[in-house]
Image (cartoon, rainbow, N blue to C red):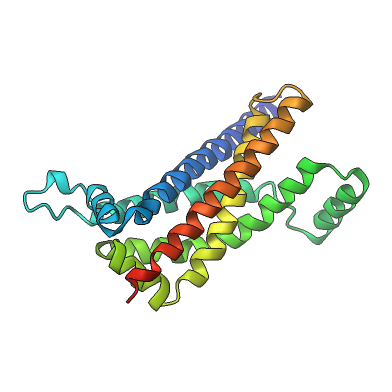
Length: 223
């Protein structure tokens, strides 16, 4: 009995850890996209955001502390690592498990099961692309701004990483928040679930559009 109780507590703790880390990452993602979208208001607006992110208002010379951005990148990487480790416990890793999931999807044809599958697929892609993004930002925080970011995105071709990463993280985050909302009682009936799915879709479209518009807005600054 004691072993079963410990297993249940561990399972509950892992479940809570996955939900909490996922929510933190989703909120950070959307905040990050809003901050980056300051480029849509012009280079000066993004410079102001970047300098405040570096706590320039606390430095005597007004240049701020770029290492703050590095610390943020490391913190996000740590939270993402926790999220990945916990999530891996629920993924169908063996061929037998994958076949069983495919058969279940074909027989039951349940929308939320398909969403979970998409979340797993996007999670794998994010696992490959996110470290690249975090390394580029964390290793050169002083380049964040209209000119430095434009050079990185367009002149160095990093848009080929950022664009698919944008699509994957948005889909993954929206599905994740939707599933967390269901899991913790935000939906009590199918009507509410239907509304949540619509909200999920709207948020995905809005933030993807915002991200793509921001990437394009860097083009004039690329030189």
